[in-house]
Image (cartoon, rainbow, N blue to C red; front, side):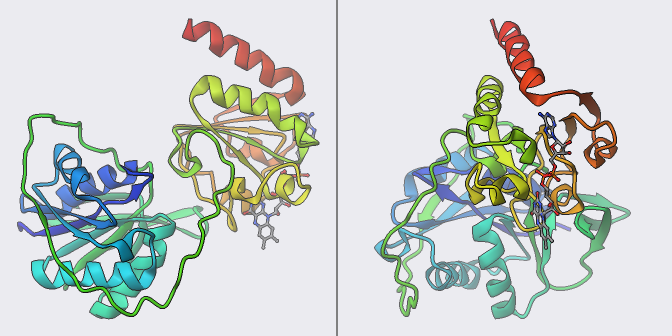
Length: 323
Ligand code: FAD
């Protein structure tokens, strides 16, 4: 059954985040041959519309306003509700990002709709659209079928492959004028944590350190390895609590959920709360002095040893491969 599906693209620092393209790919499956309409909201987003089309959107609707230059749930919900009112879609896909997690429930409640949150896959099976999502902190997966009403889902970054970019694709990019009012949140300043380089939640490679790293300086070899692999540095809560690094790096139940292609856990014991944030990574490598450490139960490759010896060796070997 062909459907019209809206996809909210996410803009950061003037560029579309990867999850936008992954959401378009998910929307293509949901549309089952119907139309995929990208939606971009922000201060100045029109120039990015063509990019969304190259990744598979059939056309794009933008809502631009100075009041939308920064994300606020009030502003974005007004803009998105206006587009939904105009387009009357049968499907709606957002990224399961900080923005998506905040905005999607608000929109679902406004529409009196259900919401499949944090989907890691979507497919057509037996004539039904089937979404897969993790439950019990990633220990199991459930399959959800929407039988009625709007098909509304947020998708976890790094799980659904984007379509290949097609430079020859073209599609209409139109703007919708929306009178944005009643923004109750005033953003006075945006304070960015100094996380240089690759965005942790979208990184293909994550090198994470735990209490075994022993100090702030102990993270340096991990940063070097992440750098060589083009990845990001993450941490356990143990390392954050010990003030070896900032909480913005924390991975786990009360931190970020990541699903990179490669997760290298260094000096992390593998507490259940940590596993909740990384156990769905595609390949897990654990480096730990303790052969009984729980992290080895989820690891594809385990290295029993001192991380301060093993990590620099890995860095040197990866450097050779890059030459
Ligand atoms: P430890 O458990 O102390 O492990 C350190 C590991 O380093 C050990 O296995 C040790 O063998 C190894 N090691 C030491 N030196 C070396 C060396 N030189 N080389 C190699 N290995 C070495 N934790 C999270 O991570 N994320 C969360 O989101 C989170 N949320 C929580 C929520 C709640 C409600 C609670 C109660 C806890 C939460 N925790 C979370 C904390 C969690 O229970 C653990 O305490 C924490 O993950 C432990 O961090 P760690 O593995 O770095 O430290």
